Image (cartoon, rainbow, N blue to C red):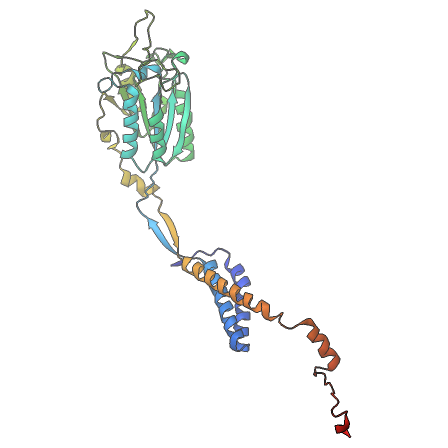
Length: 364
């Protein structure tokens, strides 16, 4: 049991001590009904004092584990990620949705962030401990609008990811940062840098990355993609027309595992080919949550207030006090005002009226 106190202790004493002293003095100097009235008023003050002190029972939630693990999901939303060659004829983004949720379940005590890239890179979710936010985003993720497509570029999120990880390392250098890149590896519009692989190298990020994986989606045979105009009637999972190539035939997207393996090597993480919803546990098995939590755990202490019985008692006492005061109102008005005037003229004595007796013959 502890006291959380609604007000500072000095202010509580300043308000209630004089009231309690008054109630005690009136109880000792009053008699009969007046004494009972002041017992009731003393109980009102005492009950209000208990509520102001706010007695509470502290509880420590040991199950609410917060680690210093930061998980960064980098998601490819280009049109090729709608190719229907995942786990049969499902879109690759369906695999991304399932894997993102599975990773948050495998690391339930981490902080999560999402970067998505298509024709540009945007931050979809700042670091948060709410895994439900990741699930909500994954459930609604869609491919980019087909007419706005600017081709696929594996290095498109590089600048944003560099800025994000650098800021995170400066803010919390002791934290563990895991990067998970979800893509099919297509690089039809790369930057053509000096990296020699048709895209800018991710190698400069390796010192900022403590683990993670590059997850590749798609098959060597490839799959076709539905067009998407931003409406719910188009995109993967609908009967929208297929995206076509320059010949007018349905375009086919194929996974580029060479590019994906290269990015994984540059980041210093593993690469895994995702063609079915297999377990993601191997991707995080090297992260010892309990060991990390030894540095990053924060015990969450909550308080269960137990003053509610006194609040009920206070309400009853106040109702009693109001009823008692209401009964006294008519008593103060029972004496007619003219009675006071008569008392002033007669000195408080009743007038004596002389009645003559025997004014007739009998009076002689």
